[in-house]
Length: 131
Image 1 (cartoon, rainbow, N blue to C red):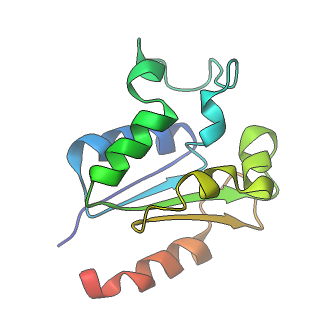
Image 2: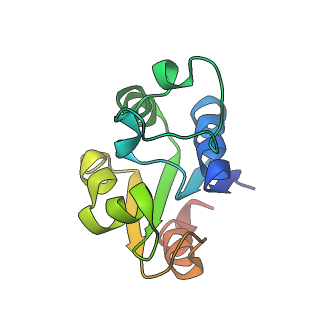
Image 3: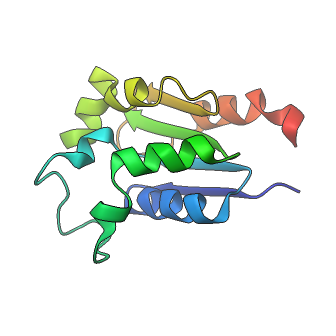
């Protein structure tokens, strides 16, 4: 009876953009967004290409939209990932960025660029009273 939007990698970014507009009960973003995306040259041609995306959906505007949302968010990163997501997992950059938002959980797991079923299951179990 509850809508959950989820995505991995490029699909994770798409799920985040969707969630900020559709306000689902929960949104699971697996390696699809990092606070580090605000840095020049961090995004590449393999990601979603929408004209003006970085102006409308930059980390500050995303945080503001999430703060105003009722959606429960889970962001995950793998410690065995390469690039920005792996660095984010190790340094908890996005976790620190969202630390003051009660309905946002950011977790690093021991895997790579994957859906981590253990982390997702724990998130869902913590919110099962809301179903």
